[in-house]
Structure formats: C-alpha cells, structure tokens
Amino acid sequence: MKYWKDEAEAVKAFVSLWEACAKEQELIDGMKKVNQLIWFDYTESGPNCSFNVDSRDGKFIVTAGKPAENPNLTMSLTADNAHLSWANKLNPVMAITRGQIKVKGSATGLLKLAPKLKKVALIYEQVLKDLGMEDKLKM
Amino acid sequence: MKYPDLSFEPFFTWSNRPRVMYKAGVREELGFEMEKLGGTKAVLYTDKGLVDVGVAQMVIDTIKASSLELVGVFDKIVQDARLDLINEGAAFYRKCGANCMVVVGGGSVMDTAKAINILIGGGLDDFTPLAEQVGLFDGAKPLPPHIAFPTTAGTGAEVTYAMVVLNDIAHAKIAVAHPYCNPDIAMLDPELTVKLPPKITAFTAMDALTHAIEAITTVSANPISDGLGLHAVRLITKYLPEAVKNPGNVEARGYLMIASTMAGMSFINAFTGGVHATGHALGAIYHVPHGMAMNIMLPHLMAYNLGEKPERFAMIADAMGVKIDGMTTEQAAQAAVQAVKDLQKAVGLTQTLKDFGVPAGREALNPLIDLAMGDSQLPYNPRELQEDDVYNLYLKAR
Image (tube, rainbow over all chains, first blue to last red; front, side):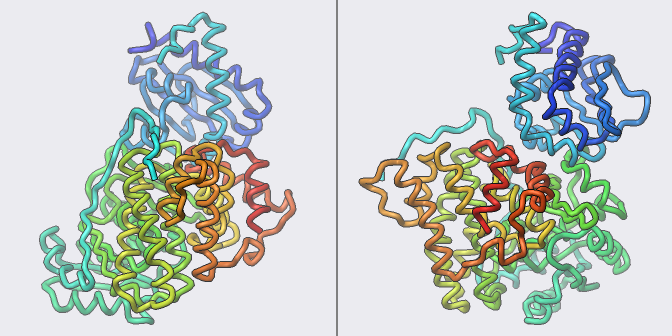
C-alpha cells in the first residue's frame, strides 16, 4: 500500500472518519435518506480491511469489518484509492469507468451524498490530524 | 482573440469507442457494415412518430436492399428510456431470433436500445437492478452488433457509453454507464433529420449546445474535450438558425449532426454539470423533454457559474461569434450568456418552467431539488451547488 503501513491503520482512519461524520447533522440527514447497509470493502488491500455503515431506519452505526447481514450496497476499492476518495482527490465516475471502484447493489442513494464529499474531505483532514496521521495528507 | 491559458486536471482519460460514419444517405452502407460486424438478423428499434413520418421506412428500405434480414420492428419506444420498455424490447429481440440491432431515433430510442443490448449480451431479462447499480463496468464484455442512426442532432447518445433511464415508480432519471453499450457504428445521415419539426430541431440542438458548454466549463474539462466542444458551439451557432428556417437544408442538418456527435464525445469524457442535474429532475417529475429542460436551464446555470471559469466562458462567447476583442474576460464571459439567449430567441425558444407547470413554492419544489442534488452530474459543476442555489435557479427559470 502506498499510503498505509497496514490495513489496521487504514481501517482506524476510515472508521474514525465515519464516526466523525455521524456527529454532523447535515450528514446524518443525508444518510437517513440513503437508508442502506453499506459495506465499504477494501479487502483487496488486506482480508480485514473493510468497514460498514448501517443507516437503515434512522440508524447511523459504523463498524469495522464486513456486516453480518447481506449489505444493500457494496463499494469495493483499494485502501489507497479509498484514501484518495475520502480526500476528494478521486473522480468517482472516472474511477468506476476504470474499474477502480466496483459497485454492487443500488448506488443511487449514496450518489445523493456526492455533493457532500467536499465537507467529508474537510472532516477527513481533521480526523487524520487528530490521529497523528498528517503525513497521509501528502498526496 | 488571444488564446487564454486554460487549466485542466493533471490526469484525465479519453474514451472514443464508436466508429462514426457521415454522409447524406450513409444508410446505404448499413448492410455492408453490419455484415462485417457479424450481424445477419436485425431488429429495428424506433418510435411510432418516426414510423408515421416515414423515417424508419427509409432505413428499412436499405435493409431490404441488402443481405441483412429484418426480423422485427419494435416501435413502442416513447420519451425517455423506460424500464418496462427496455425489458419488453429485449424479449422482442429474443422472440424474433435476432442477432443484431439497428436503431433509428433520438436519445430516448438510442438509450433504450443500449439497455436492451446490455440485457441481450448478458443473457438477462430485467434491467431494474442494473439501473440501480449505475456503473456496469465490472466484468463488462462487448455486446451483440449494434448500429445506430440518430434522427435528432441533440443527445449525442450515438457515441456516449451511458444511457439515462427513467424509473417511473421512483420518479427518477438515472444515468447508467457500460463501456460497450454505445453502438459499434454511429451512422450520421442528415437526410433522416429533415422531417424533424423546427421546434424539436431547436431544442434538441440546445441539448447539444448544453453538452458542449458544460463539457468546456466542467471541473473535468480537458484539452481534447475543449477542442471538440468549442467547434460544436461554432457549428450549432452557425447552422441551427438555418436548419430551423429551412428544415430541408441537408447541409445545415449535417453540420448540426456532426456538432451533436462532437459535443457527445466531449461531454462523455469531461462530464456535464448543473444544467444536466437540474434538467434530469425536471424530466423525471414534470416530464419536460430533455432538450427543452436543457434549453431552459442553460443560461441560468451559465450566469451562476461565470465567476468560476470566466476565461472558458469567454472562449464560448468567441465561438458563438461575439466580438470579444476589447472586452475584459468577465465582460466576454457575460456575453456568452447573452449569446445563448439571443440564439434561443432566434430559433423561437421562449418557454420557461412555468409553461411546464413547475411551481414556485419551496415545499412543492423540494422533490425536484432533492433529485437534482442526487444527480451524478452535479459534482462536476464548476461552482458548488447547495439546495438553496438549486431552488433559486429553478425560480429564475420559471
């Protein structure tokens, strides 16, 4: 991996990001509309490199690993591309067309959050700083 | 005009799959080209309007004069690519024992046919779960032979690797992409467009103009899309008034078709922006024809975006024939908006959203705003759009 020393470090950063997002009203409202169990599958970068977000029925629960139930949506990519994606440095449509992001399930709900990516990127930057991972911001 | 420095993202990709053939009467090459692709038994996909005015027959006649066997005509396609008709169209293909498709129509027909071919190629019956997946790139394989004849100079769907599908139950238009969904060959035959009424000629061309302008000004613009987009703007500005005034002018029709194809190549690689995001929502909820929605929203989004990329809007003004020497970049950019309005007036496009029953109240507009905010093209708009911005744009367009 280019940006991560191991999968645990990557998962820690991503889960922390989503836990921070779960405190933002704008994103809570957005995820309520998504109403899905989403698996962010980065296992291409390591067998335990993934987390899931359950936004069904008004919940906003972030958990490391694969969900116990079948997800409504699976987004598969490498941990490095996930890093670029959360930092808003990866063009999502281009990434899908190049096979860098693989989508399984209904992505139309999550697409509605695309305009919030700039805000998520700012949160991500702060989360990385809080975790002492400022070096990751050099992309 | 001195060519300005135009910045672009340091990394971009360019896809240019379909072969394009152009000639007034190029349909006579259909049999020869389909044979080379391996197609022998064709279903022709079109709509009833094109059957009624004899345009579909012009292509059927060339099929009959060739070695290609016409095993069925599916003319049920209506405005927008609808899930039910996509599934029905695929069943029809199988029932007829076809092994290739010929497509004659505008964007709705071409997009419906793309989705049908994905079902045929994948051995599937129902497009609904594929539409929800949005990007169909994982494991995608080439599809059965497919030749398309656009009959409007507008959507560019003959070259784009995406289709816009209407989910009538969810009241949403979803852009779905597949690397091989566009035709193997796009045959541009301007003789097939001369019967297009002036008003439809006008607003479909405004769709093409929107593709070009959004591709030039999107966050993903690149030098190749700039080149194609700017020349498309020149051709549309020059030849649209003539095609509206003299619908039988095949030369003007031909230039419009070429411009539409160039704009299609441009936007499928550089993406679009707020005009498409707000326009898709108008089509899904108020059934505003796509080109008309683009036409109405275009000048308002241009005015909203001007400050982000003034040099690019100045280039558009120049391409539209505005004498921008002596103007500041900002004045030239502003002149592009006026040039679009002047073109709309010249070709008789005066409608506003009010004419399509779009209300003014915030609560009534919320479903529209919600759809626009979730549109895949919104993030490519050069200036950030929030809910309030989209609301204000809809109000201005009423």
